[in-house]
Length: 110
Image (cartoon, rainbow, N blue to C red):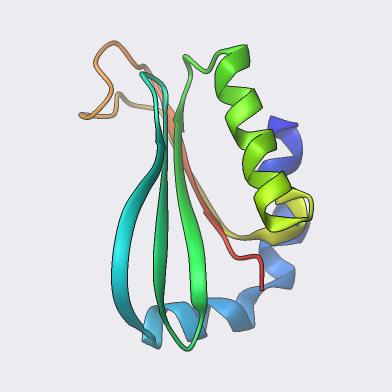
């Protein structure tokens, strides 16, 4: 599943959505899930309605994977089909003590 989330093909296919998100207006942000290795933030606003920012570290557990699957259920589609931007960092994340690397993924379900 994680390999699918980082699909370059999915990221490139959604470039028009990035403009809508980056040029849009954010109304609210809320934590959807937070664990010791995963943070999912829900962002709502106009004109994009909602998208999710996922930060996941090298310490993901099976419970974290279940939370990603739960997000797929919420969206009604595969996360791989919803990826619009992805960045990986080979360094610790300051919010996740003990992490060695992390990935951020922007998810837009339409």
